[in-house]
Length: 398
Image (spheres, rainbow, N blue to C red):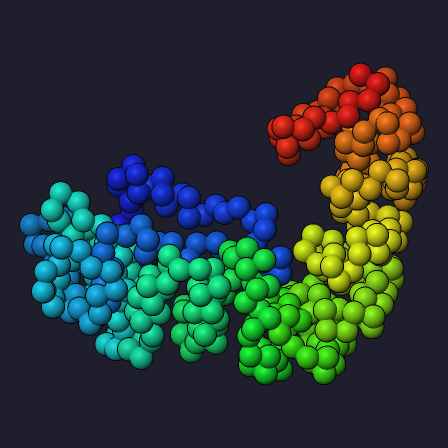
């Protein structure tokens, strides 16, 4: 559990902390999940970072609120500041009761404000943790190429310290996929394959590992991915999309047939078909050199008639500008099985975005809906304008 020494009190730091919780995910790893905040991002903002052992906590008897001080015996200076000098022990202006486990050490993030050290976060670690070495190395590669940074973080994905391993994973989650692809092709395939074989690997990691194996692996590794996907005991609650993508990359013909069969089978669980859709999106957006976009669109079309997922398929067709599919999309509007707000709204968004010259049917559809309920159409138009302020819906019939 992290040690929260104080809340940010400086406006600039408070704003910066808020930025840590937001990230532009447009081109980030499509198979990763998790918080975008990383130790490196925090370290870049910190005035000083120290790693060591807490000792000698002292309460201030004159302060009724329980204030006091605690010493930090510095083991490693991760990020230095002039105020530290050659000190080996720093007194923190906070009373911190010691853990029963006397081997616990802390990574302490500090500001320096008005000539005083102001600690604001502590990350606990076991005595043998490499967290200080990891973060110090991360700061050293911070300004290097994306490839150099990802190679560095790859070596920590299987670190024994969960805090370190998780943080390295977040760095991949935040990385631009084109950079992941460039590095992925040069990674040690057997190491990645070992993670997939390991029953202790977290399911949330399988999407990344599967997609990496698809980049660095050999055709025989396709069998490993297929076996993992077929294994009923594997229980991949997440990561199926990346595993599917990796399988297709290693065995394009067999893998694509396998993926499209999942998408088309309405008897499959929703999450399986959704994983298939996510994998199809990946090939449309990042790997149309392997699977042409026309084949991706054809693979997604069966989802239009699956009532629990048709709205997602409609949205993808809209975003991809598949206006030649307007007839299939528009005919869903009002059908008994699809007469629900979420599907009707998706159809309306498609029709509003479709240029009138691309589909007279879509233009007539919008005009008819506007006559029925102009306010409803205007509300959807407003939402579309937020999606891309520079573009405006077709507004056919207006």
